[in-house]
Length: 237
Image (cartoon, rainbow, N blue to C red):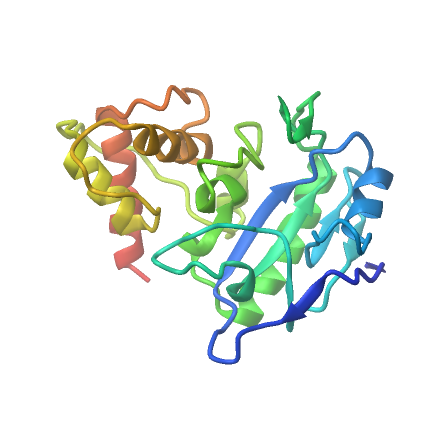
């Protein structure tokens, strides 16, 4: 592990404990530019770790400090996600858009293998639940897309990091029940019974994580089934 200290951190809340692992992509053209930004006091952003595409791991902020990686975010009613999480940045240029440089691409095997090793260590030391291994887009669906639909969540779960659903039977698709299931799993969403812009953003974030082949933002019976499996799996822990 390469130690590259970042000045961008502060104290964790005294009453909180580390309960989330939040995964990101850097969204910058090169590893060097990403590392420079994460360690620049003027940027006001950081993470605890950054993993290069060749698998090298950079330690930027001590785990007992709050790194600045999640921004305005929420999960299971928690809103100080930075204060309750470990943040890991995966070097990747990211999607096209005002906040990303484009040329989004799959995450190489060496990078994913390094993430598995690092994550297993983090999860074991902090007793982080599988459903608390999340993408930035999960906790900030209206703002963020990372680590995105090319990130291998299924492969990660097969290595014991996070959850991945095995499909069950169809369920009727109605807005209120689907919104409630999203809220029960942890997403911040109002139960309105209508397909508003907030619902579209949250559904798309859910699909980006658990059904990347179809990110329409429109829920359907398959999405209901995926959520049912995820919620049932949580009962076993």
